Amino acid sequence: HLCDAGWELTTSIASLPFPVIAAIPGPAIGGGAELALACDMRVVEPSARLGFRQVRMGVTTAWGTIPRLIGLVGAGAAARLLYTGCDVDAIEAKRVGLVDEVVDEEQSVATALRWAGDIALGSPRAVAEMKLLLRAALETARDVRSLERQLFVDTWTGPDHREAVEAWFGRRPPIWRPR
Image (cartoon, rainbow, N blue to C red; front, side):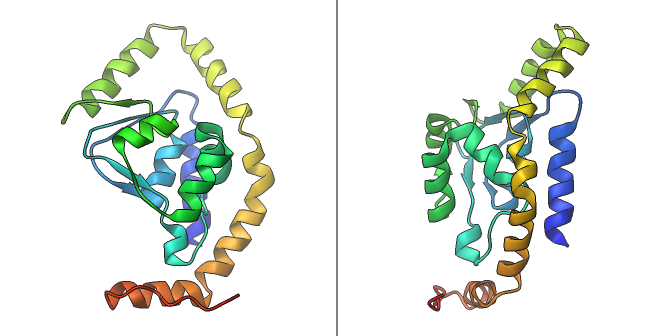
């Protein structure tokens, strides 16, 4: 399943024994935003937008996003981002804690490399152990995984997702049916 492949990818990234820095020059929407959350740090350019549009496509998140997002922005901001499906611009993403820094155009990669250089000044073992400690704080991802997977499969194969896809290609708003 798509949900398993994405979860394995994001979990593999999050589990690497060294910090992973995402340099985001533009939009990171849906799966792109979920992928960015698997990284330890995120630096964006002013044109970046991040969004979790899953509900607008009639599905849930699938890649371990809930505990990662709550860990970054808190339950209230996570709820707003996930329930509304609205994108946030770079400044709002920084304000809520979704990203770590907003830099000038074409500076996200240079900034990420500078951060990596700063990290490399520390003890590799201590950095790896620090990452292990930070990730241990988010271990509830394993508790939620089974439910997240089942709900994604249910919504992906359900009528709301079909309607969202048809509406998307028909360039019209979806017509949601009551539960």
